[in-house]
Length: 384
Image 1: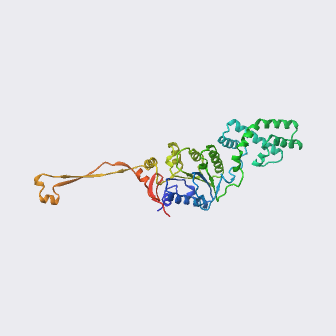
Image 2 (image 1 turned 180 degrees about the vertical axis):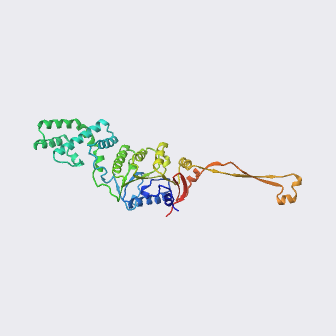
Image 3 (image 1 turned 90 degrees about the vertical axis):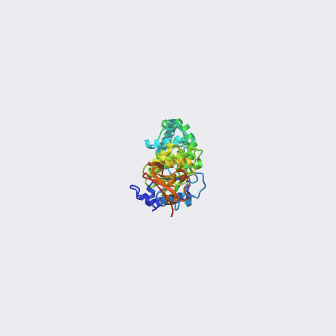
């Protein structure tokens, strides 16, 4: 029986890999490869779009890791994750837009000024006969006061508005022009996510948060845009988190896990998931019902796994030998037949011992891992 057959015997876990949630923690590359290939193969066969949240700094060959998927790196190629980002006509759209601008340092007042600016552009375009959604190209046509005046003059020329209304709209623009200029400064960060082709079922989108480990606002921006797409495509998306297991600020990963819709498949492969702080580790344990622990280099992490795997009652026996040294009990016959000694066996009270000691977890052999599922922990050898 392999690990998948074992998991399928547990009630509520007899599902495809793409529908389950796996946590693999440890440095054993062979176990990660076997479990990862099973997950990726299942995702591809079910037509899922894969989002690779890469919190590493390794130049790995992702194409070899993710099989038939075509890898698209959002830091190098344009991917349309949020085509209606600039639509701010509903409360939900405004809330989403406020959250994104908050990542870039916009406070509530400046954000609402940008919302007013986008509404101004949308209404002007509608009066000009363009009822389509706002795009990057349309906003570029409003990139300076001179271009805005030219647009409004067009409305005057075709009789849509008069001079009084022209002056009123020009005044409204002047109230939000400063915020609009600030927004355009950051527009180069947003534009790649508004252009390009939308993800499809044979594409894996790499979100390289590890490459921007010193730029938390950009990490938050990328993760929020990904989450927005996933919320709109819950059934067709799977999130695959790769973590280097190092300390420091890895809060972006926890934010992603906290905000993912419950119906979205998510998997996490970490060199050491137990290096997170206790609150973050609790979030991780709650998210992933299937956990696989391989060899951990850090003894503190191995100790946490030791505690998590629980204890069992162990009964130990002790024996003692009493030798009768009296003269009449030390004859040659007594010594030959052992009648000069008495053996006593004592059965001690049960004591608690860890199922898997930290020393054993620290020295697990290659290809082996502890499968922690439904409250049971079993040591498996992973093989093809």
